[in-house]
Image (cartoon, rainbow, N blue to C red; front, side, top):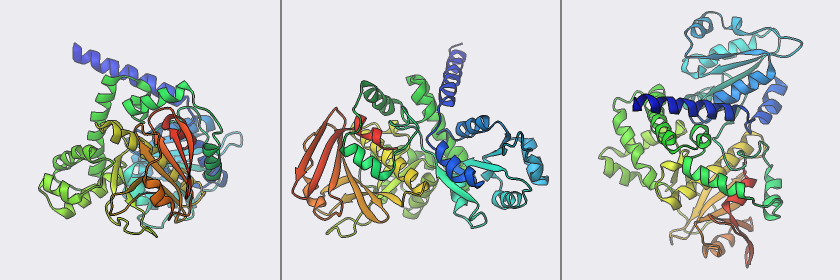
Length: 428
């Protein structure tokens, strides 16, 4: 009876969550409409499992009012897709171009060839929204058969800004707004930050606000990523060993990532560890940032730092807070890159004397904004003087996990020490 009650409780929470999320316009909606559908290009949306890709697609389809949703797991759809894909295209109604959503279509080995053939032989305009997780991302780079026919967008889970609003500031506007303090912090921002740190950024646990459901979701999510998604992109015979490796990653978050150390703990080969890490990156389970070394004397050049998309798995509170910041910065970089604002990348700064700035946003190969993370230290880090002297950007941001907002003039530039609940609201 207890087991049945738990299942019913989880199902009730999930229904509530989906209802709440379904009422939200995700931050990519405007970009997809502007860049893809206005030009009748294919929109490809990839991202972590259960971050809201299917919900986004169904919401856009409902708003369009004309079109169809198809999932590769549907037997009838697979049959029609194989024999006559053109029959899946609905007719326009009242002059409205239909929207066809192809969910998990990447599981078809020939999906790009078939989609290209369907797209190129259309007699009338039709918009396509293709969603998927890791394998869609892998195959997007696999050949050029769809080149010129699509735009690719990376959907991230929720962030502080998206919990309140769906619009995203452009790079220049964001930089001027944050240093000009265009808006002020409120209590809700602190509550949202606490929720993200406790439940994580994924819709189900975040909006469910239930610790028991969050634990169940997290366990199922990790098993699904490794047991199902990894099975689709590899033929590993021993997924149990990879699950063990994944369980060792959270304790390494925020530190220099040593493949050698992990290899010794796992007692397996160096190349095997690197290959498995590549799989986990392709599955949007984790991401790695590398040191920025150009014009940095005695800089590290190889060792990366690893972060999780689902950061509540990180037990250490300081590392979890740093991971949350990393996710906000990466989401912003991906959004600006995918919408043509420039090529934005995320690095960190560290020299061989162990002086470090946690993050550095680089725009078109040029350092744009360094970001340091501290739990509560509102005094500028001593490392700012070292790195601002050699960076072309003379503004730095230091985030703390407490209310704060002070500007500090240094010899080589200006540092804003700000509370994360307020400052991260300016990012995507």
